[in-house]
Image 1 (spheres, helix red, strand yellow):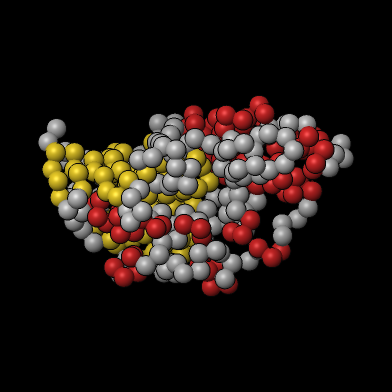
Image 2 (cartoon, helix red, strand yellow):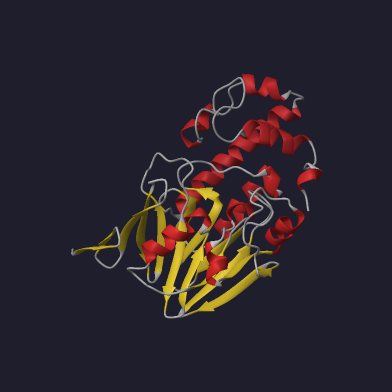
Length: 301
């Protein structure tokens, strides 16, 4: 395998590269299938890491969830394909890109709820570039030789979650509603609903072929079996909590039962322990809130 150094970037053959951002974090580029690449952090212990997906073609670049990696993404891809960015697809409002795509004149694509949230000031990243192309339930882009399908999911992680399916490559980007290492959670400020996250995973399983390659919002490449495993864990967790809610138990009483221990290996940090939320999503609190009351109107569109 030949090694080529360009502008501080190490290129290993035609399909792999690494680049560091301003904070020194390493970004890795790997080809998934055909012209679809994934860019992700090299530090496996970075719980805040995320994946960016790139489609490279004669028409230019199409990126999914570029986020704060805008400049490093472009730098990392340059030795592989020095093409302009034509589209940036964002799968929820908390991942909308910052300035680089806007400066480059790219079309920013997202569900209509993402744009509505930014215009209403109802998403934390209020400095992001506003989506310029939005859709309701489904959108198809014909980019170079690839067919890119964007499909809206039920409200779960947020109310604007979409999956991005590269039909010919048989690769799907799921965004932050799926993590291949840990169970995902919902984002209250983005209109999410913990019960809906279960429904999102059900829909993903119903839509995708068994042999699809899955790029999660965070973590390494996954499979349908990984989604199935996470879906069952969340369904079982929901049912265990709902059974105690039906008995009239308070949130603290449920916490004291240590209900989450069966899923501790799938939970981020120490949230499985009894006595209250720890580091990571508060699954008990989230399910309890969604099972016992309506969504907080402050965060709804």
